[in-house]
Image 1: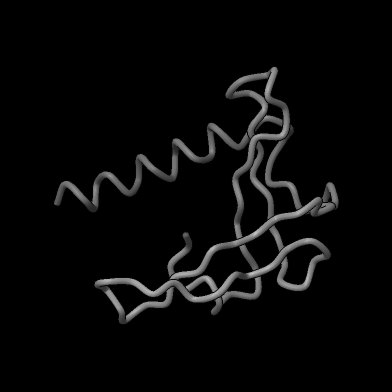
Image 2: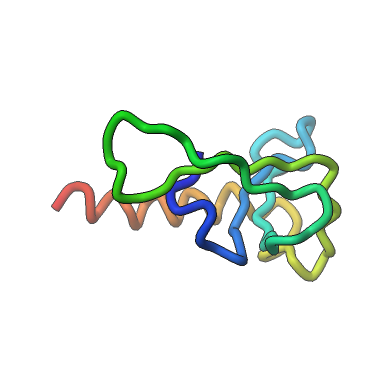
Length: 93
């Protein structure tokens, strides 16, 4: 589920592209609304935090151009860990 999933026109997606490569098979991509195979699902009916809409993002054979990959092949895991590390500071405060 993605908070404010219907509001964006561009999405940052981190996905495993090579299972056999383990964490080195994870990449980060820029996905644009309207790409073939990418659909924003219906708004979730949540019990709380109703101030933000939450949606499922559905990917069905989405073809992502190489220029939409962030960093080198396999950079996704390292990128995710850096982003999560930065978030921990705010949570701890």
